[in-house]
Length: 411
Ligand SMILES: *Cc1c(COP(=O)(O)O)cnc(C)c1O
Image (cartoon, rainbow, N blue to C red; front, side, top):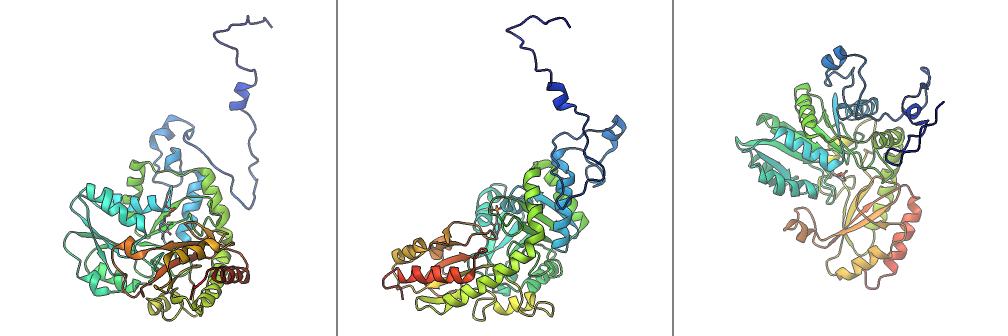
């Protein structure tokens, strides 16, 4: 071999560089393991030009480009469609981006969208921001008042957003009656199904056209991944969403998909355990002197409890199912600084947004300043939201007890 003279301008590549890219090793055909390998691609290789020219990303039997699907995304999409009782699923990089995607795919200039007054905050902010910029107007209805929704329909109404239950004030609406009302007006309904997670009730059997799920919450379960999904039963609607997804380019990472896939087998176990723990902790707080109202749809005097029973209780699930999240209203005479001191006095409950993860979380909300008015069905006072993690509920109750005792004049 002739020695190549040293050249300071074009340094030689290490000899191993090409074999690092073109390596003959192939994973054995019959390799099977509980978890799918992580498939990652921007480029997908075609065997010949005929395949490159004829393959259609809409047919899920072939791959064209990473953004249009990999074995990882197709697997998660089909499992989520099964979980929620739908047929088609599209992934988005966060729950909020899934909500935004539905709006962008289904609404045009001049359309109007209706949102519940307890809507996930950033969803309302999107309506006030970008949707308004694009000439899409919105109106807000009371989720506990069917006539309030009914009174808002016009010929411009194109989409109604639903949440069951609301993620801060926890009202459970009459979902079936609301979707029926949408159908009689020829209007699409989209549910933010993060709370039900595909377990507490079947959104499509309740008449919903589109179900959006923040996979960030229960399906991830780790508090470490952001992702969202859009599920439909209708293939025309699904294609409209998929085409828009193709144009907007909101893809997800194969590693994040793998993390969600890893969470799915334990989803039902975690959901039911967090439900049980949350009901135990909520029952404890309900009995405390400073608490004037408990907001948890499985408790009798919580707003929308009858609707929760009607949608989430059945023969297979006589106690019904609910997410491990609830709020309490502390007496208005308690000084706000004391409510803050109580939240900061908790040791196991951490201060932070989100839910469905391993750690219990707490966030105080000043609702009147947040929404501009006192929500109907809610007593005045200071609202604090609790998200129950996977800790022993007795330890959580002990933590609450000592934080309550640690603040003077708290009852
Ligand atoms: C968290 C959440 C979202 C948004 O999910 P991200 O992944 O955080 O964007 C949407 N809706 C509800 C009800 C949520 O709790």
